[in-house]
Image (cartoon, rainbow, N blue to C red; front, top):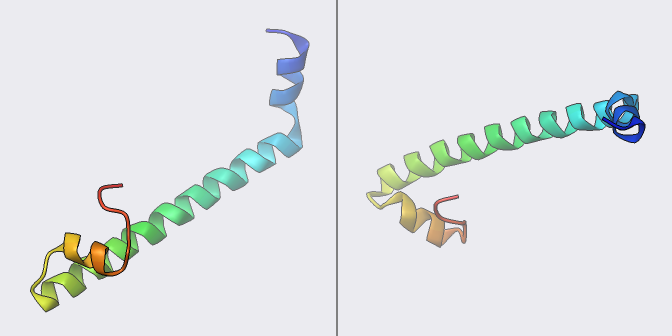
Length: 63
């Protein structure tokens, strides 16, 4: 491994940025999961499919 790559891996700011990115990704995934739960409950209470709820609110399907 060359010195440039080693220096980049040991850079505290880079490590901090990576930790922050992972934290934000976890938060995003948790919010996305919660949204799916709410949409599924709304779909069930309205007697419609989850796919139709995605269309109604202009949300991506299958991501």
